[in-house]
Amino acid sequence: MATTMRAAVLHGREDVRIESVPVPEAAPGELIVRVGAALTCGTDLKVFRRGYHARMIVPPALFGHEQAGTVVQAGEGVTDFAPGDRVVALNSAPCGQCYFCERGQENLCDDLLFNNGAYAEFIRIPARIVAKNTLHIPDHVPLEHAALTEPLACAVHGFEDSHPRPGDMVAIIGGGPLGLMMLHVAALAGCEVIAVVRHDGQVEAARQLGAAHVVQASTIRKAIRETRALTPRDRGVDIAIEAVGLPEAWEEAVEMVRKGGTVNFFGGCAVGTHVNLDTNRIHYSDITLRATFHHTPAICRKSLDLIAGGRFQASAFITGHAHLYELNRVFEKLMKRSSEIKTAIVP
Image 1 (tube, one colour):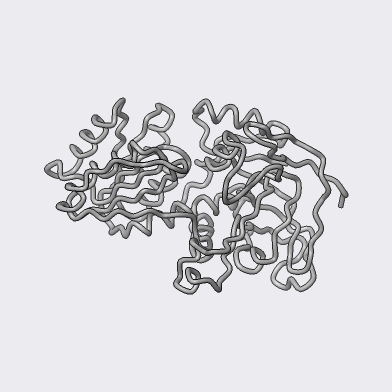
Image 2 (cartoon, helix red, strand yellow):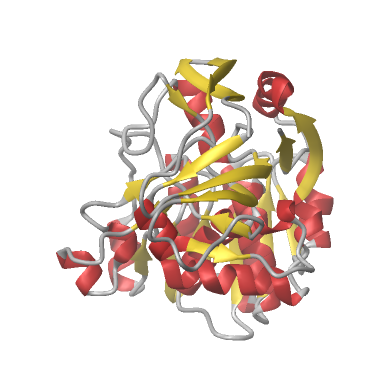
C-alpha cells in the first residue's frame, strides 16, 4: 500500500483543498478502509459554507463522513473484520457508559465520538466505531448504496421518533436529500405522504419516492392552506416533519398539523436561532412537539437492512458521480440548488 494518499482537507469557509497526506496506520482496535464511495451530504455542504462544525470538525481537518469501502488493514485485537471485507463504518459511536447511553438515548451521548475523512483514498476507523458501529455489507449491495446507511439512519430515527401509525397523513417539509429519504421511509411504512417542496426538480423526485401528494407553493401561507386542504375537513396532518432547518419552516409545521397531532423539528437551525410559535394553538390543540438528532447503532443496522432488502430505492438517491479532485466543483453546484440529490465521490 502507498505511503501517501489524496484527501480533501477543510481549511476554512469554502476552502477545501485536495492534498497529499500520509496514509493512516491502524492502531490497536482500528481499521484502515479503502474508500469505494463517499457521498455528499447537506451537513457537509453546511460545513463547506461555514468552514467548521462545532461538534464534528474544526479545521484544518480531513473532510466528509458518508462512506463505504474495503478493509485493507486491521489493527491488533480486531477479530470481526479482516482485509478484503466490504464495510460501512458509521460517522460516530456512543460511549455506552454515560447517563444518556444507559437510558437508550445513545444519540445524545455525552462523549459521542465523530469521525471524518471520507473524501479520501483511505480512512482510519477509530476503535470505538469499529467495535460499535461498523457493519459488513452484503455481497449484493453496491458500496455507494451502502454509503447511504448514515443519512438513512437519521431519517429512520426522525420518522420513528414521530410515532407514526400506518395510514397516517404525514407532511414532510423540505425536498432535500433527508426530506426525500424521510418521505420514502414514510411511504414504505404505509403512510399517506404530502411532500411540501419549493423547487421544480424536487417535485418529480418526491413523486417517484412515494409521495401521494406534492405541494409546491410560493409562500408559507399558501403551503399551509394547500396542505390542510388535502386532509379530511381541512383538519391538518397527523404528523408534520420539518426537514429544512429554517425558523419559518418550524412555524409552518405547527400550522399544518391537526389537533392532537405531532410536529417533529428534524431540521437543525443555526446556533442562536429563535422561533415564534402560537402557544395558544399548541396548548389547546394538544400538539406534541418533538425534535430528533442523529442516530443510534441499532437504527444504523436497521437502515442497512432496509437498503439490502431492496424495497428502499437506493439508486434514486445517487444522482451523480465525480472524482475526488472535482469535489469543490460539486459543492459549488450544490450551493446553486441543482437537482442533484447526492453525488458519489469516487477516489
